[in-house]
Length: 284
Image (cartoon, rainbow, N blue to C red):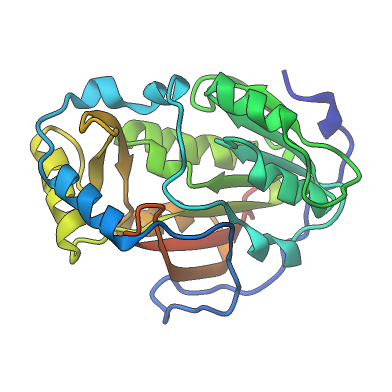
């Protein structure tokens, strides 16, 4: 059932200007990245280990494996600071794949009424125990839920839906498309979608080899296996192409789009994007 905290709040205003996806990349909006970067010699060892990966079974490493993973994100917490200029206190926000709550607490500090959902019970328990970094009027609510299966809010009831490094967790194109459709369905007219995620890097030999391995094992281009400390496949992630970016943005009027560079915890270079769009279609 939808949370009672999301009752009787007016929708967001549709503000800003359209930004073409093929425009020059911009670094004008700062991304807050917590923590440091692991030494590069460790990165080289990880690259050697990944390059030696064997075959894996894609069906057993789909989205639902995240329910049991004791997961440390590939990059430090990336907070959606670009949203601050487009939201106002009292709005209803959903943080999908909230993990341990960093984004949810950031949104709450902006005055939003936040529901964080994650398929992993241990992540939700950690989020519930987390203390905020900044004061807020309302503490986020955290619920164990499968965004692809469970009804987490009523259609057309949310002002903001955040998919922050969530789509990368969906290697199956059907799940990926379903997540985008569900996010759009939940937004009120004038509501905002925020997507922050990873870009395809085929020019990087380390990534290109991983994409090829996943493709040979039945995955889509951009998928790759992530190995545990023993060299066994732990889960399959996805990096996004320009065509997929257009698919993500297509239902919305784009307020903000930019690409930027960061590094993984293991020292690998990563390319990421963030997109903010306005839902200008009337909800069904």
